[in-house]
Image (cartoon, rainbow, N blue to C red; front, top):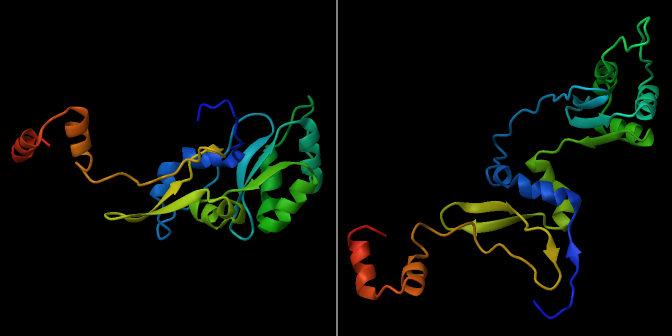
Length: 201
């Protein structure tokens, strides 16, 4: 639309990630969900995943000294020091047992109260059942004649005057031959028939 008028651009931060993991969403099978595991990022502070008492996973990020101090206070621990003043313990180890002893709701509430970065680790199934994602239709379900129901991410960002849409997950092999060869390359019916007969197209 080239009329000099603007339009509203609507996008949620997580939707960019949903678009990036599109292949995982398309290939997700609820009967074959891989077992999640721990993830650890080396360096100062914490950037790691932990398992809760109710078998959920959370991602914790805490870098600043103030955050780390509030985190340790939340779990009732102190960071031991070596004689030279350096840390004598692996920080994630100090909070791992506390998180493992509490359910997801308790852990999230405590860490958010302490203003420590935390979020539940969601798989595709959790995303599909998330009330916010469902309300925004972050994942669409399309019917394909060959594949059946296929889930795909909603295109982002969304424009108020020129909304995008997903019409299909891809046509069958050769579905666009007539448009390409006849309309674009200006081949006549006889030539198209010959190419089909010789299995060129």
